[in-house]
Image (tube, helix red, strand yellow):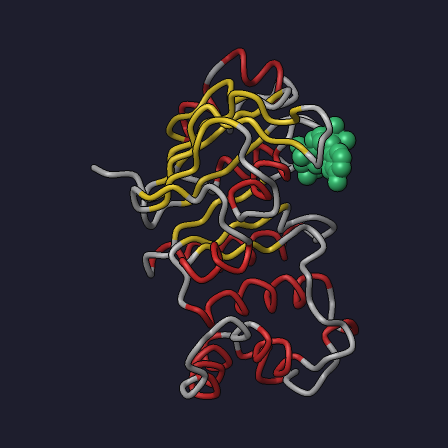
Length: 242
Ligand SMILES: Nc1ncnc2c1ncn2[C@@H]1O[C@H](COP(=O)(O)OP(=O)(O)OP(=O)(O)O)[C@@H](O)[C@H]1O
Ligand SMILES: [Mg+2]
């Protein structure tokens, strides 16, 4: 089966600086949740940035539906259907919830169906309808993350990439965020997430990727990653998966 997204032997870095990624690879299958784990500074965020066009691909390739994304700008990658939610969520804090949803459609050439699409999204996420006139910056962390994820749906993306969506959220809210991801995956939207809490991330994912020192050390079914004794030792704090 052809992969939806295929990262191979990727080398990338910031400006003229050293290579941060050097030998990263990743295979992404449609409608599945993929979780990238690895220690601080491993290059996890850098990998998502390289996929979405924020960093130049120096060597290797990123292929989406069989076509190289090399040389494309972030807005062009977005238009192809790959949406990136950075760690800081990139909401407009002084704009209302509804206005933030509208901004999600910024890249759409045809905006005629935009308001209807926003209505549909409000329907699915009642909290966003309830808070539609509230400034995004005054919402709780979980509500802001919900908004950031819901906003990606405006463009009907193929892939949503999330950098540390659970950061700073209480466990119950983290579980809700994974429910939303599962829902999105159930609709055929492929999720690629970076998760600091490796155990939680992998338990909720179908596919796991271990990145360290800019290289992919392992990728495979999430339960295999969880049960690998060496990965447990090095990256899961020695904890056995429950
Ligand atoms: N804008 C930047 N300019 C130069 N170097 C950077 C930049 N952003 C990150 N780096 C460097 O790239 C390396 C990988 O960083 P990255 O943010 O991708 O790690 P990470 O795996 O996401 O870590 P964390 O778990 O802490 O988020 C680090 O050495 C970091 O200092
Ligand atoms: Mg990071």
